[in-house]
Image 1 (cartoon, one colour):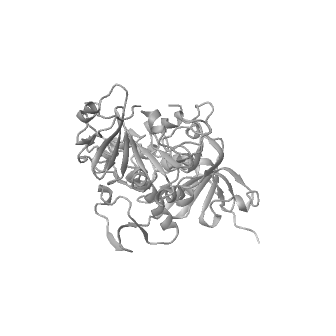
Image 2 (tube, each protein chain N blue to C red):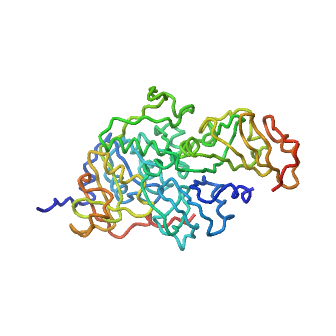
Image 3 (cartoon, rainbow over the protein chains, first blue to last red):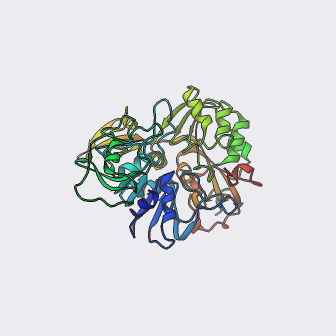
Length: 210
Length: 230
């Protein structure tokens, strides 16, 4: 699923990979792939992650991982970092999710009474990146669908999600709700539909597998 | 002409902070957090503080010491995910927490430092972060009014400074420091290297010294500045 999501990055893009699963996407890209990675705490041109032994104490990504630079990297303050986000310079962001609505709504920052660490930069990424894709397990730990007709949790942003990569499928989100695009090996379209909490459009054609 | 000398001891600078003060603290995680100034504020003991900081560091690091000592009544921040102690204090009602979208916090501080009343933004419209905020129709859009933020005191960390208070940051230790260094009535900077006038090239300065009131040299860095082994 992470390898499949990595194919979403196209040459020339400016990309922000959210904390967690999305940051692993870089492991599936060639070292010379022409893309500019951004992190909220003030860096464009993120290089490989470093071990504690190799780390520079002043150089982290927004998740706190020690990272490196590449030729052409730039450092800047937090206002500049989000100026870049809000003004539409981010071609793509890849985020985690608690819930995604069939209307493209995203909930990924708060579970009232259980988890409320604050939204960080998530709202601006979700609301302002030119393309927002979600990388998540298809269901939560209890087996409940994360893809729902409407989100029940507090929203991060409305109508922002264009595509969802899960362990079961690739699903596009559009005017007609969820549409199946690809399935994982050994997973049938009807199994994906059963694990989805809203109607799933399944094209008549044979879908690619990943 | 010679530019004035603003070098100060850390204790003398921090001693000016009064009970009830609003204090901005630079840093995003470890990089750029002024750990030594924070430790001095813990020893100074000013209470009922409103602290403005991107995050609450991690347990037993940075502003967590101020939270543990009960000196903070209100925290204006973006994310507490790495500090379970801060989340516990928030959930227990021992501190009031105001969450901001990260770039909006940065821009509110920038506006405060730039002498503006606030900013207009569509960030968070349709979410609970918009609740209670004034909405204005402007240029055909509904926008939220985000008031500028200023503080009584800002505590910032620089890699290099000169005695006039010109500051230079490195790598991702820049973050909120240059913004906060413009947005407080009293700006206190700690510097890993405090240089004589002229040693910091004019082209390399991020924060002009006119914004800075006191600059203090750090000695050997404490363990808090080091790479965190998780």
